Amino acid sequence: MAATETFDHIDVSALFSDASVREAACTQVSQELDTSDARKQALKRHHNSLSPISQLPVELFIEIFQYHMDNQSSLKKKIIITHVCSSWRQIALAYPSFWNDLPDDCVAWAFEMLKRSEMAPLTVSLPLLDMTYFNRTEDTPSGSDLTKAVLEQLSRIRQLSVIQYSYFLHDAMGKALSYLAGPAPLLETLTIHAQDLKLSAWMLPKDFQAPRLIHLELDGCSLDWTLSPLPYSLRTLNVDLPELILDDFMSALSQMPSLEDLSIRAFPDRTVTPLGCIVTLLRLTSLSVESDLLSCTKLFAGLTYPISTCVKVRCYIFDSPIITGIRSLAQILGNNIGTIKHLSISGRGLHHLEASTHCPSPLRSNLRQPSRPDLHFELASAIDVPSEVTIMSEFLTFLSLQNLEELWLFKNGFDRDTLIGHFGHLKLLRTLVSKSEPAILAALSSGISLELSAEMPPTQPGTLKFRGLRRLHLINSNFSGSYNFGEILTHCLEKRRERGSPLHRLYVREHGYSITLLQKSKLERVVGQFIWRTTELMSDGHEDLSSDSESELTDVEEDLQWRDASVSDDDVVLEMDALNLEH
Image (cartoon, rainbow, N blue to C red; front, side, top):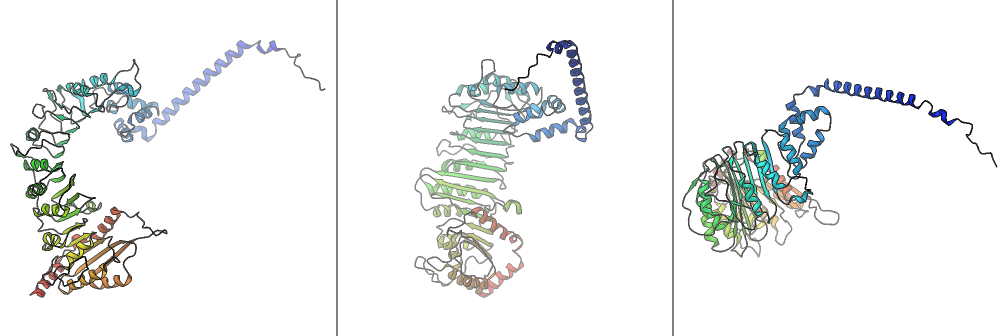
């Protein structure tokens, strides 16, 4: 076996004989390293201070920090910013406005930021819920402590949201609102959101004073409109309530002459008693109402506003009489709007109708200013109703359509008499966009002798309707259906051209390839310009649905970009020629 090497000859005691000397040397080296590190850090700070970004004003740094924030993780990002470098930390800690938006998910940090914000105006969101959700211990403050501490700073709150997340915190909301007693000179926005089974009408303290309050939002809870002090300065009122005493609410509206934006979603007391007063809101620019038909009629009957106001109405039908209610509401709306140049009629499923003075293209707003008047009417029924077309016809009867230039018809069911009765006589109607083949044929075949199909009665010669029509846009038309839509369309367009009412542009968009080359060539001969687009079929024979309704509208919009300048002297000459042919 090999000999085992030992170290008996080494004097181990010699290794520790100079331990104190070496320890002192190590200490000295460590001190020199610390001094060197401190010197390097000082040089780095000096180097950074010479960079251009370090010369920026503190206020600009704060703006950059704020731009980096977002509502979902602002607290986390604030903490990250304060740990980038000592300079950034000093800037952030020394600027109270950086800490003025208190978090709603961390009570301890909310208290800390309340202290750091000093006297800066506050943006506060107070969630009224069980704070054990945030793993609160006995040593940490509670949500009620935070509510009291924050609302004691009412004089410097600029935006305040009080949110009740639980049905079982009814008393917490009342207590929170009681803290609003006193002046709030900076308060501009107040939001109260509640989930309250008791449906109480909360009351703001009588000595609540907010002379700068311009935005009030009530979601799921109501105020005592007769007792709560509401300032004249309000410009935006958003009300989403399960119940509403309409007379008291209208009385409160009469005390808000500066109101510009009013949104109401509520189901008031269902009485037919007319309101005791008429409220005039001369500065109103936007009005949105969602309620039952009777309440909508009653509310609009008690309001006077400029014809330039953007009006959105969503009506629910729960009971009869339907036609009478539609007539009453339509007459009131018709008296409060001006000349309509654009109209869109559509519907989503059974018992749902929409009518809008805006064409539905998402690009329309980029091409020109929104059309005036601005009215969007939506009707949803929870019961069996007469024909949707009958209801829409009653509604259209009271609208001023003499100057209508553009009609989008995306609702099936309009028969010949209804369509012609409302739109056929309009001399300025230039553009028709539709998904309904029967509606198109009803419009184009009026006054032309034509055998349509077994399902559609023949037409007789007579006076042409839709004489001013110059642009036709067909969406998802089927040229290979049970009746030859393409041949009938070509015949109608040819006869209309012979009688002095030619079509300048025909736009066709379809799924698949139902139109043949022969049909396209025939259409090209009877219109000024023919544009055809299709949705490709996938390899399995199904339609590629990537081109949805929005892209269809976008395509139509691209085709309509030239429309505004196209109503020219040429159209006037064609109108005169048509009159000469008739005589």
